[in-house]
Image (cartoon, rainbow, N blue to C red; front, side, top):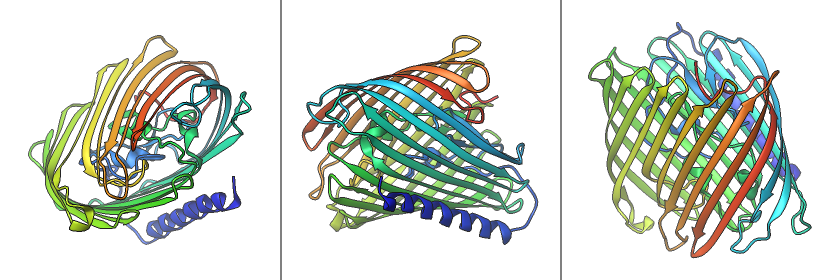
Length: 443
């Protein structure tokens, strides 16, 4: 990897750390329950640290996704400070390492060290994570490759009325490695789910640079009413496609609790595309949030979205839905669906439709199985082609002593970009050491 790639990640993490520290020093007040986002959209931050995309205004702990694929990390003050160390070593068979229409299969070996730092006070929680993934191949047709990802999460309870969340993620490296790396997840309530961007791979994408940041502010007017402002900005560049893609989004919402378990909200959202696409999208809508029981939640929202003439028209209805439930103490499921104006990791596009879901079960005292499927698609514009991708996976994992676990995984992918179709199948055997990672089942 080039020095400039490392520099981008280091600068991103340093800037976010300084911002977190400054806001923490200038804030004061008493501790309240951790603020959370309500699920109204699958937002732009959904590739490397995608937990920002699922929002839910619930009293209690907020969760962040662990970059090493072990599950969710609680963002609370139960632990003052801790280092998060880990590593995953895998052997794999990959049918199409370059995501080409007719690729040559190869064996592969993968190493993914993991480093994190969690710092918690009674009012503020910080989480810093970094994970590189390095691959080699048994076939001489492929050279060694690497992908580096890093993320910052900060949550601050200023007082019993004001709260804010700050998140950032960055990645640099070969796009094709993501299917071999530890699975990145999104936080769907208390469940670590696979987001729709697991189904977003572009043929011949080459080296990708991806940066995404988001800031949210929550003001609680009363016991029943609150205001939320969420802003985000993302940037992506692919060397193989010679395209830059950026989008800035702003979302404002007003929440009203109809009862202790049922809430409603209205929202307004704007998106500004700059890069390969230059245009503005704006709209709004209404939504409902229902907490059926302690570990079951449903959120629905939707409304019209309008695009300026420079976007090529294409007015439409945007919507999003999120559902999660603990079926029993040993099983849980999640479902996500959305149609939103976006320019996500898969490249420039005006509208994106996504659906994903999964099932997780503890089958023995030390063994778990999980099944996930995801679909994502974008429309055709004058400056870019349509895209469709389908992802599915199954994993069996059993846990040993001292943070060691062993897993067997199958991951499949079918995609089409601008009429170019490609398929990929991956079988992995992995040994992981993650004594301080996330959890698949929250207690």
